[in-house]
Length: 232
Ligand SMILES: [Zn+2]
Ligand SMILES: [Zn+2]
Image (cartoon, rainbow, N blue to C red; front, side):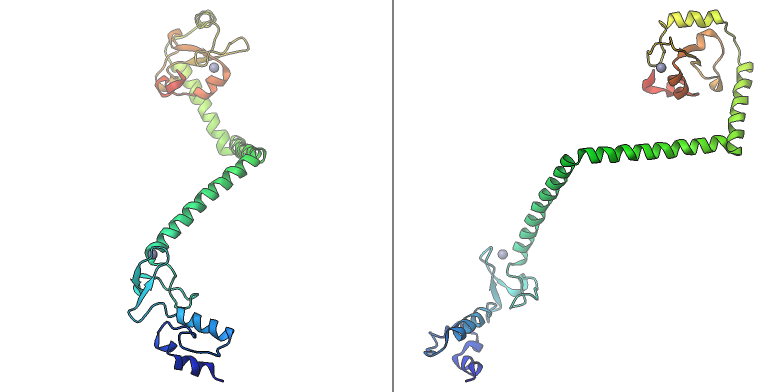
């Protein structure tokens, strides 16, 4: 028996939603019945080219549905508008999921992450120190350092003013034996700092001298006091 000839005869291909029972099909088997029910449902975009979106419940023209090859009618089950909402909700939910996963990872791997950060700092610090060392020992670097030393000596001898050991002692007492930049004790040593650097027109007069701990003196370099910003 050719069941397709039969379904054709029952009017299914004409687009009517007709169950075998309604078509008075009597002896049709269970399998044939289900096949025919599906084929009648698959005609959802009906003759008026309308399709119902199960989410918003609207009867919309098929143009309101995006194409989807995986479905029987080649259209997405939900209308474009509902599809957009679903997709936004999905991505929104995923966003929170991803953030939660990251938080969880950071929480569970604090040790590893801290170690990684430490290694990164160390690696970069080492490569920087290495770069500095290489430069200092290179011919160009040696020349640059020698030139800077010479220029500084020249400035020192050319700068007006002079100071004595007694002047320095007086300054040390006036500063309370503390670094004028960070306030650390100068007991373990100090550098004589030109408040206005010689390179910026400062003098060797005691009034332009300050005592700084070695660390501050080295970090100040030849910055003008106004360039030191929050250090002062
Ligand atoms: Zn919809
Ligand atoms: Zn200091």
